[in-house]
Image (cartoon, rainbow, N blue to C red; front, side, top):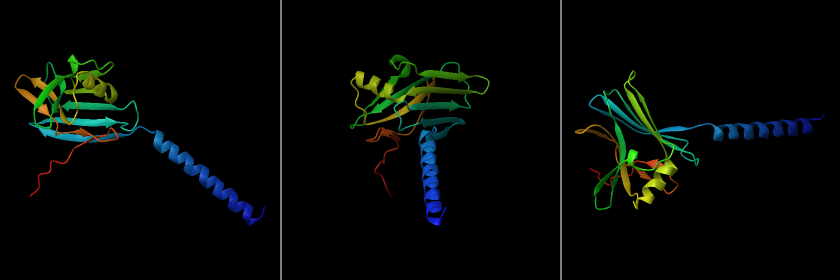
Length: 164
């Protein structure tokens, strides 16, 4: 083999390696922390799993809290700043699940993003801005910051427009 053939073999092998690495990176599961808030010793985390795939999941995790009964939901915020609460257990979210661990004092709600958006559209709700909440007691409600969906369907914290 001469040097031209060796160079072509090396370039082809580098191309195949790069393509395999790209496919591995695209197919691995991704997890993005949208919000983490510490409220009175309790931690409320909003995490989005595989946001660019059709089977993406939104995880609302509550830890370091004493609970007997926890209700998770979404609070919609209209353009006129009118707040409306919707509880997940009242909505038809299909195979979404509530995971509780009394030993570790954690509670998590896993909701499929597509089913959540469809359930809100079935109720006639247009999502402008919203926040997730966890109601631990009648007077103790833990809320996430305002969130919104981008044009590509990704969760993000929108700009408030308030500056110094």
